Length: 188
Image (cartoon, rainbow, N blue to C red; front, top):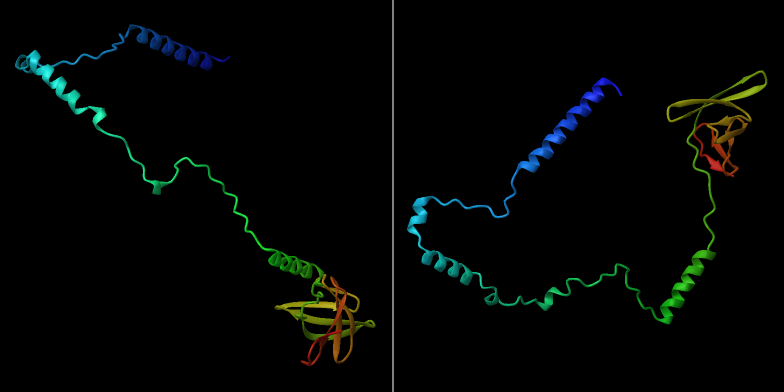
């Protein structure tokens, strides 16, 4: 324990001892005294004080207040509340219809997944060292790939000819065609 800590503990201990001594010396008064100036005391007599006490008691007669009456519209103040929704009762016809609809929903086949439409624009091609390189653009980004190469890890370039480019949409293994010279793109 260092000197600063000792000093702090000594100060706290001294304040605690002083507080205990001060509390022991203070007198506890159960009934506080009411100091009334002498000018007021001389004007009052014992009879006046007795009459005033009686009138105060008459004003505070609780039996004359009556009972509180509750309105039935207010309902039960402390009734238990259930937050679970009430079940609706359905007849047999509605139940059979609901079962048929649920079975039909389960037996219907989900739609066949399809590849999204091609977002590429053909920009050109180049042949170097017996490899054909294709230049494409997508949203202002230029892409370069060769046959068998991937485009954005989503498409693979399969073939290139003078009229079309064939790519495969890899997640579904669906082939798509991008036509050159503004012809319509298709899927097969």
